[in-house]
Image 1 (cartoon, one colour):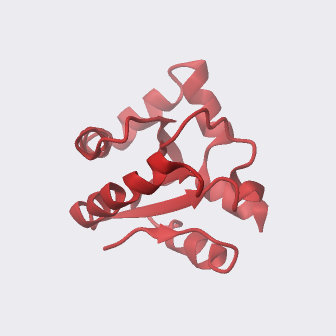
Image 2 (image 1 turned 90 degrees about the vertical axis):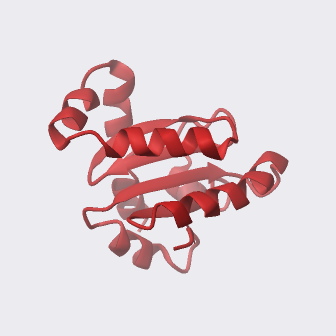
Image 3 (image 1 turned 120 degrees about the vertical axis):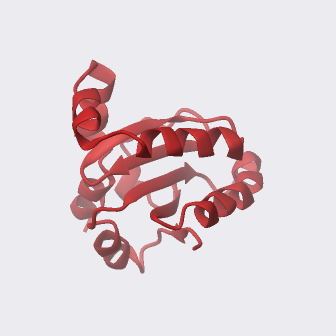
Length: 141
């Protein structure tokens, strides 16, 4: 399984794909970013190790109408979501082993624990309001 690259021609297909119960792991990057270019191979390897999850590569400039309001401070930024619950949103070191551990840790949590954590801090409540990729894709049309 490889990651999908979100673009203007496949938004409907991506939205349909992530509408299901699978975990979503999105990498928010930029084409001009050297770190992102280097990290892309590691992200593809992560996708291959986790075929039960949907991996998305999103260029924040090309897809600004989808993710333009998200606070992406540095690259790579990962967004990990299960159904409509955003489990993680933040900058990561470009280290595939670290990302792999994070993905496994999030996926190991029960739905009840994810729901509890989603409202456990103002930051996490903000993720639910602002970072839900399903909602962002729907709003962008």
